[in-house]
Length: 239
Image 1 (cartoon, rainbow, N blue to C red):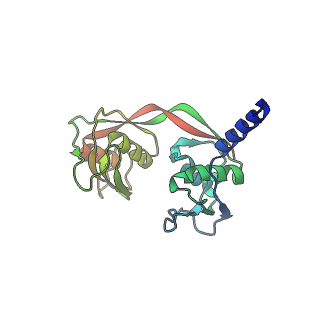
Image 2: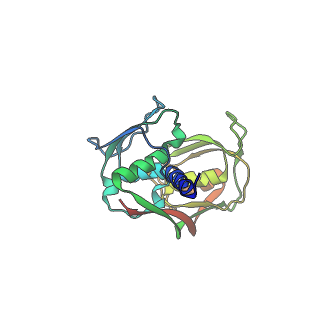
Image 3: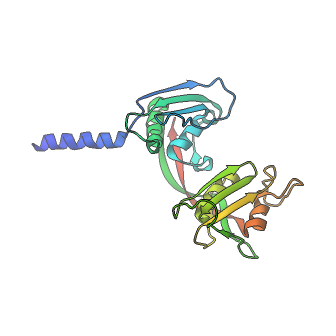
């Protein structure tokens, strides 16, 4: 093989690696539904479907980024809604869907993004004054070390075998800001946290139950302390 042929082959491989797997067929149409995204349809493992999804929701799914972790873009990325229907190529898995969704957003929305380390207002998950009230993760179904299973409901979080880092990540989605684990606690735990979902201010507790901040301290012996934290943000350059 000549040097020119080798260089061409290397370039072709690099371009292929950069593009990654893509949906076999995909459609994106303005959604007639009211705002609000329904979960992806999993009945057919060879397809993905999102109904009433905003571009920002799709970016969150594609880059596995929380809402607070995405900056830039016009206001319409939150307000416009679309229905997405796509077919996976033969042999592809659901784990490859985020990468395919990234390619779809680049193609249909001309999305361009970059990562940026910045400081922003958030919280540190810390041990409360009276110490932790954590239950070791040895109940219910046993899961692999370092993984967890659970669900988030309105006013309730239930998890088995969750680390403090995992708990911090889930709480960030509830408070709308980054949460960094500073408990220094290792191991896995079972968590059943209940609060009044209409009372999310740090210093209030409604008659219907404690605020999320109060519940974390009373039920888990932890607290969310305001702090400026370093985070990895996804910055929208163009869409």
